[in-house]
Structures are given as C-alpha cells and as structure tokens.
Image (cartoon, rainbow, N blue to C red):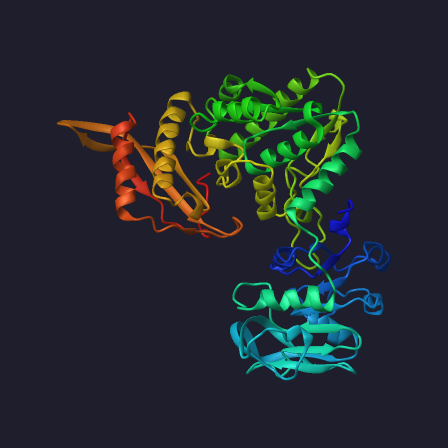
Length: 517
C-alpha cells in the first residue's frame, strides 16, 4: 500500500455544536473510513483543499430560522459531494435550499418508529419499521424543490428526505447514537454506497503511515517524551520507538503519588523489556515536600503539575541536542482545544495542547493527534503492548494526591496504596476489571471507632469507588456483587494497618464527580 493511502478517502463532519458530533466521526471511523470534524464556519476553499468524499452536517442546539443561527457556506451545496444532514443539519439543508423549517407542535425526544416512504440507497439492508432516536423541537415543514420525503414517524411527516440527483440527504433522527438500532448500517450505506469509500483507515495502515511521517519530521534529530505508563503516552512511546529507536529518550518522573509498584513496573516494561532509552527520575521527595500542609485539591493539582514541568525540564536539559518534544495528544484534545464549537460553549483548554513552557523551544511530535481513545488502544495492541497497559483504567495526573483527602503524607499514601492494590487485585480476580471504567480506593480524613480483637480502635476509613462511563462526562456507580465487596473490605481491614472501616460510594456523576477531589 502506498503511503498516505489512509487519507485519500475522507469524510468531513461540519459541527453545529451537537453533543453527538464526536460520536458521528467515531462511527464513520468504525467503518474504516477516515473522518475529521471542523467548524460549520470553515471557508469553502479549505473544504475544497480537504477534498472530502462526503460531508456530514451535525446536529446542534439552535433553530435555523433564528436571527443568530449558524449557517454553512452555501458553496458546500455546489461541490457535487454527497451530503448528509443530521437533525439541525437536515433543517439547515432545507433552510438553505428554499424549504421551510418551523417549530414543531409535537416535539420528539427519545425513541421513535421510522417507516420508509420510498426505496433509497440510504435504506439498503434496513428492516422497517426501524427504531430511531429523535431529539428535536423544530421540523421541516416544506421540502426544497427537487427533494422527496423518504421516511416518516408518527410525529414527523418528513423524518428523512433526499434529492438523489443532487446527492443530498437529511435525517431528523440521530443515526450515530446506539438507540438508533441500525444507525451503523445507515452510516455505512452513506460512506460506502453513496460516497464510494472502500475502508482504507485501519490501525495497521495508520502505524505504517505514521512511522514514515515521524521519520520524515524528525530526520536525524532527537526526541524526548514524558512517559507516565498510561495508555496514551505508552502507545506514543511505542510508535516513536518503532520509528526512531535510540533517537527517542523517554523520561519517567516518579512524583511520589504513584500506585503500588508502579515505578518498578514502568521501568521493567519499557526499559528492560522493550529496550527503550528510559531515564527514571525519582523526584518523590521534592513533590511530597511541596505538598506538606496542603489540603486544597486545586492547589495539590497545581503544585504537582508545575513541579512535574520543572523536573522534566531539568532532566531534558541533561540530554544533548534534543530537537523535538513528543506528546500523547489525542483527537478529542485537539477538537476541544479549538474553540469552534459553533453555538455551544467553549470547552476547556486541554493540558496537552498549547500548555507547554514556551522557552523549551522544541518542535512538537504528536503521533496520536488523529486518533480517538479506542483507536489508540487498537494501535497499542497492534504494536504488541500487553493488556495491562492497553486496557488500563484511567488514572489522574495528580495521582493518589487527590485520593488522599486532606494533607498528603508518606504514611497516608502507604495506607491508600495497600488498600488500592487489594481492591484492584480482587476486581481482576473476579474478572471485572475490563468491564469497569474506573475503580479505586480513597482515604478519608476522619477516624471512626471500631473493635479489633478485644480492643477499641479509633482508625481511618477507606471508601471504595467503581464507576462505568463512556467518556468520563457522566458516570454511574457499578453494582459490585456483595460477596466481592465483603471480600475486599475484609482484606483491607485485616491487611492494612490503620484502617477499621470500609464504605462503598454509590454516587453517580452528576451530581458527584468520579474522583473525590
């Protein structure tokens, strides 16, 4: 396969601020077709240069007939590229091409039953009536000239329309969400049958292309990477190592708030097993010294973040002739850091994008910046990383510092490390680790009365937390089996000195957060 084949067929998603926009791109990529998200306001020349095989207009919270409604450049409709409008995107097509959109008397939120009104290539291999997911308060009242209604629900006479001659389709429902049962088949019909894509975007092809790109960018230069042992930095390190060998130096900083044996495991895997240039910096004492007396969670985060940058820079200056800094930036980081979200709120600036000290004067290498998290895991598997790395549950940058509530001390960290290790060991033994988004222990800064043997005790409390989530934005607590909870609690109380009570957190997010601090 020639280099850059994977980008020869591309779908462009124009974003109007829908909460599901990233999901559209992910669903398209699941069909092995490369897809990028750009703001609805992108100029027509940039779209031409992007050269998409098809364009998808996302949903959004606005009304197309509102005075401040976002509108796409009308030149999009003259590109002779297949277009699919979803929800607001459908209404935008109608509004721009001479149809009529208005407020719906019967708003639709949730499941609806879709019937086909006519044969259409978009409907191939679907079985009507189809269950679809609606989320709209407006609807298309009158079709633009040349368009035909191709689908209807009980409350929407025009739930889907098409102009096959112009190659433009619109859906009032959301095919990208799981509640639309055959939404994936519908999107496949669009990207394969209508747009003519063949499925070149595989992680194997991505690795080949990216290795060539890294070599072209770096040449004979030297690259440094901050390795945390997490999924993103580990996969980035493996890709760079495969491309550059000894031109890459990974710096692993022990910040003193890592989990049990984590520092040893990272050194063993990357230094000794994968034979990477790995510089291990034990800065745990300097981090802990700075955290003395600090109880405010935000202060803890800032102290750890700033000290990490200082230690990393000091170590980087010890390596001669470094030209490049590598980061495990992912595509959602890139999307969220560009404040283009149309009518939706500006998302927080991400720490991996634009958060570097300017005086380092190093060129960035970001081999994962095109990938979603699930794709990163797939790349990791292709590169031979073991499951304990690729399928690792998320772990916060400030580490155990935000799971030791109140002041962080070596004694408190020791208690938490032991309790956390028992929790994870038991969850793995029960075969539940891969089914849970995140599971961890928290040390609470209160003491409770207990009885151990014949003596009264006054000792610490450990809270257990296990949640399931798709993206960390919302989460629900996991209904762990009682016997498993009992086993974990029993082991912690018996094996961890200083703990006489274990509780289980059954808060969801919202209103609680996943972490306690």
